Every structure is written in structure tokens, then in C-alpha cells.
Length: 255
Ligand code: NAD
Ligand code: ZN
Image (tube, rainbow, N blue to C red):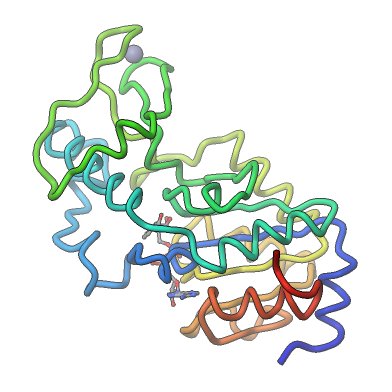
């Protein structure tokens, strides 16, 4: 299934970037945007929960929706794809995980220093000042059965309302994280592109950058994407099945 060239490349790489999208969490039961059957984004009103303008119109609705979404993700578990990525970091000198996902499943399976270019569901920030914080697990564990209005937290510094610290439509990506992600994508020896439709820019430009720089690349996705013929190795299938096989072909059984 895997060429000798790919196995050797993986074994000998000094720096691998693993660029992930919603598909890496699909087998954990976190629906992708395009997965309309599964509920999380059902009745997803982009205006209300995906823009600051919508949030300001009804902050309690938005805050309550995110409390529910956060708890839904809390109930899920990482899958073998997250685990294989975390294990890879133990075998190679440097692995940079760059994710478009707002869930924390990479971290929960042991990946360190994950670059969340679209922010993180568990992080919140003030709408007006620079105050940021991460909600404690004890709070995320509180059951929220369905999205219901809930008044936003109040900023301890300026008493304004807080918002989820995720990147909404039309907003810039966090500049320090984005800078690191761009540099890693242009300087790595190998990029693994896992479970992303490649339709959301500027995030998708990370794969384009690596391809443009002629960096060897691997894509894993059950569906066709625009870069199928541009990557060096294209695997049509599920991340949770193919990534562990790739890891084992290069490094033997996972711990
Ligand atoms: P997307 O929904 O646009 O695309 C998901 C991709 O994953 C598709 O190409 C699909 O074919 C592929 N996929 C589905 N199941 C897979 C599997 N088992 N293994 C490998 N690939 C699989 O997601 P995107 O490209 O990440 O962009 C959508 C935006 O929405 C991003 O900003 C993303 O972070 C956000 N989002 C995040 C989450 C999350 O945090 N888990 C979930 C949904 C959407
Ligand atoms: Zn504030």
C-alpha cells in the first residue's frame, strides 16, 4: 500500500508538518461541516454563531450555543488518527501539528504545541480588551443537553462581555500562530494533509505553500479534493485507518 520511498521519507524526515481539518475528528463522532446528518452544525446559522455581528445581536444565544458545542466535544474521544499523530512526534526530531479544528482531540491524545489556526472551543476572550482565558475542565464537564440561551461571562478586567475565542467568518487568523504555521509549512521535509476539504482560505494555502515549494506531501481523505493530483502520495480513505497503518509500516507497532 505504501511505497518504499514514502516509508523512507517518513523515517528520515527531520521536520514533519501534520495539517489537519475536521475529517481527522470525524471518526470520533465530531461532525465535519459537510456532514449534515450528524447534528452539531444542524440548524447552523452562520450569521448567529459564526460572525461577531450575529453574536452581538444576541450574545446569550451565541454563548449558550458554544457551551453546548463545547460539552458535545468533551463527550467525544480521540481516535487512532489523533493517536498515530501523537506517536509520530515521539519518533521524529520535530512534528508540528497545524489544525483548523477548534476541538482539543489532538491534545487529549498527547500531541504537544498544537497550532490552532482557527482558535479553540475551550478558549474565551473579552470582546473589547485583550483578556483571554481557557475554561476549566470542571466547567466544560457540566452537562448541556441542548443549545439554550445563557448569559456570557463577564471580563474580570473591563466588565465587558466575553466571546468564544474562535475565528469567525471575516476575521483574521491569530497572527503569531499563523506566522508559525506558514513558516513550518514552507520549511518542513514532509507534510501530511489529513481530513481537510481545502476549501477554507487562507487555511488551505498552507498545503498550497508546501506543494509550491516542492515539499513531499501525503493526503488522506475519503473524498476527492482539488489537490489530489498535486500531492506526492494520495490515499483515498479514512484517517483513523490509514494513518496507523502508515505509522506501523515506518516504525512498527504503536505503543
Ligand atoms: P470540512 O468540513 O470542509 O472538510 C472535512 C474533510 O474531511 C472533507 O474533505 C471530508 O471528505 C474529510 N473527511 C471526512 N471523514 C474523514 C475521515 N474519516 N478521515 C479523513 N478525512 C475525512 O473541514 P475543514 O476542511 O476542516 O474546514 C471546515 C472548517 O470548519 C474549518 O475551519 C474547521 O476547523 C471547522 N470545523 C471544525 C470541526 C472540529 O473542530 N472538529 C468540525 C467541523 C468544522
Ligand atoms: Zn475586557
